[in-house]
Image 1 (tube, each protein chain N blue to C red):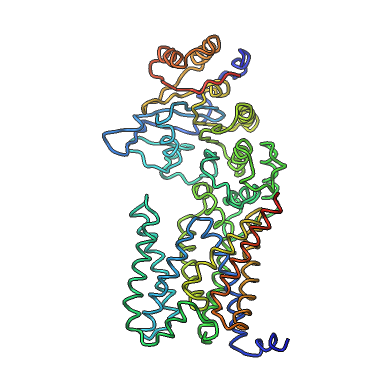
Image 2 (spheres, each protein chain N blue to C red; image 1 turned 90 degrees about the vertical axis):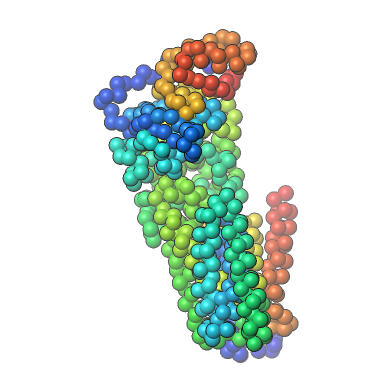
Length: 270
Length: 284
């Protein structure tokens, strides 16, 4: 019991839980839409390419999280641009941008002197988050959440049936543009804290689990957020107790819960 | 299928006194200039019409549909909706569109019927606003119109083909349109449900004075329910007097079981501009 409470005596741990909770709310909001639009690989691509932004930031002496956000936004629009060039091969655009990001990261990272620093972006590090980054994640999360709520119905409808949404007058191009921006921002904010290699799993797994349970969109979204909140907080806690990587711990926990839910649904529906 | 059904289709009133809702004028479309898909197509539908465009696969039906919905740019000619060129037309809520349901929607998508019908009320609700009671009531109204009021909370993926088609019709009606356009409304639906669906369309046409244009390869139902029939073949469109098709179908009925090709031949001799509509003639 003492050990249980001990964790909350440290500022940096309280911050970790605060950031984790904020991310646990916005990541499934973006993630469910990404999955339903069949763009799961875009999350993976943006997360990996955000590392190029991080290395650039480390090299040039700018804040790496901010650099990652800017680079992510450019990468996201790069994908949109290339997709129009190869309309029949949508996944090609994703592969091209991913290649560029990884190539850049590979070359630039050889100039980065603080290898440990760089590694904290790969797997994330909630405990080394600076106060500036805490504020940054706070603001970005608030903005993403607010915009998601404001465009809730439009985002839903564009994911469900884009051509009918256009006929109904939904400003599809503008909302899609905004969504690309939100995705890029969410991923770069999360990459610093939970790790670039893990963000896309956090986008996809809660959505996958919630889709097993939800009977409509709103319910599915709520399930995804609850699922994400539970696994994020329990995962963080376990990782401090066992001194394992938080990102990896959270993902393994999510996979375990997803399997349990799938099993439950199979048995229950019989 | 009996003779009285033909008699039930009311004679079209003169179109002169009714405003034209859809006008297609000398419409030509080609992806590559040398192979036109539509060749100078001209037809129109006036208020209260129930029109069908029939034709076999690859005749240009879906291209025509995309041009009417402004999803393609014509090579020459124009489409006018409510008197305005479709290229500059903005008042899309006046048009309700029912796509081919089963092939085009993701059945795994976690969305309820109500959520879809609320989302489609975008012109009524607007950006940044929550759906209000009147919008929820509207969902109930249109679902009652198509006989699906019990499926309000059903997940889209759990509906049968016929139910989904009704829900898509309800969605198309939710913004009080004046024109309803349907793309192959009975694809993947069994004969009985198809019948009920056409009855519903006839009722909407009669009671709501809704102008209906459907594109179909289902000649039998088109003849029974539509008052104006256009036949499209190799990019050419021609109006077919229903009388000729009725005659042809009666003939078919008489010789039921004979080779389809013979009937196609018969149609061709009946009307040279039309058509090898390889209509799915189903015995009932």
